[in-house]
Image (cartoon, rainbow, N blue to C red; front, side, top):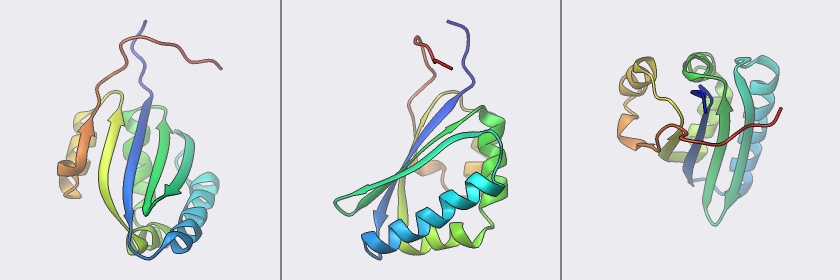
Length: 126
C-alpha cells in the first residue's frame, strides 16, 4: 500500500443548547462548506444522539485540513457551532503534519487531539 494522504477526522461535541439548535447550526455550516469551503474537503457529515454531536470529515491531505480551518474558523456559522456545543475530542485518522500541529497549538486545541495513526493497509474505491 502506498502512503495515503487522506485524513478522516471525527470531532465529538457536547451539546449545550439542545439537539434542535445543534442541527440548525450544523446544517448551515455544512451548506457553507459545500458552497464556499476548501476544495480539499471530500466529505462533511454531522451526526447527533444522546446529547452528543459528531462531525465526520474527510480531507484530501494535511494541507486541505489546514486550508479548511483557515477559511472556516472566521465564519459566523462556525461561531454558531461553538455557541451551541463544546468540542470535546478530535480523533484524527491519517497523516498529521507540522502545520496541523502548529494550527492546533495556536487554537489551544492540541490537548483535545487523539491521533489514531496513519493507515497501514486498505483501499479506497473511486
